[in-house]
Structures are given as structure tokens and as C-alpha cells.
Length: 99
Image 1 (cartoon, rainbow, N blue to C red):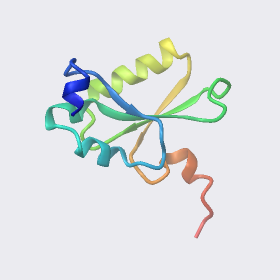
Image 2 (cartoon, one colour; image 1 turned 180 degrees about the vertical axis):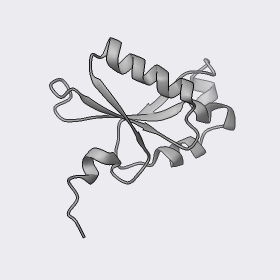
Image 3 (cartoon, rainbow, N blue to C red; image 1 turned 90 degrees about the horizontal axis):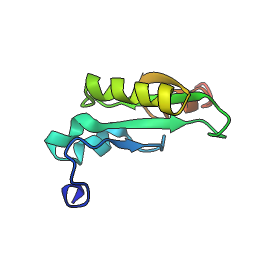
Image 4 (cartoon, one colour; image 1 turned 60 degrees about the vertical axis):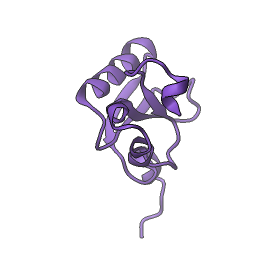
């Protein structure tokens, strides 16, 4: 269905939620679009906080990661940190109690 809504085959699909797996989102996409799927997790309040987690899936291409880093730094003027996909991403995992 994504192909019917978004005509550009190289459009980025970015999620801001830390409760959904970026790998799961990417796996629901056609194989040709998976390399363009990633996450951008903004910390709250987003208009104040400078840090952004750039969450890559096992399918995210290096070119997509580099483009998101560039957009984060130049257009958004924030500090992007590339992290792997994990439950809660890195920032929220630091808030989980140690078990």
C-alpha cells in the first residue's frame, strides 16, 4: 500500500516511536524500500533537546544513514547519534531499571 501513497521509490520512511521495532517496520515493506527505513527518536521536549537517536535497522543502507545524519545536523541543527535497533532505543533503555 505504501507504493500507492508515496510515488518516490527512494523516499525515507522514518519512525519517531521508541516502542516499535524499526526492523519490524522495515520487514513489512517491499524489499526495495527496506534500505530507506530508519528511526529518528527525538528527546522531549524536542524543540529544546539537541540529541536525536538515528536508529538503523538491519536493512538500513549506509547512504540512508548518512543522509539522515546530514539532515539532522544541517537542517535540524541537532546532534545525531547512530544507534542500533533495540527495545526502547538507547536513551529510554538508560531509564529502565537495572534488573
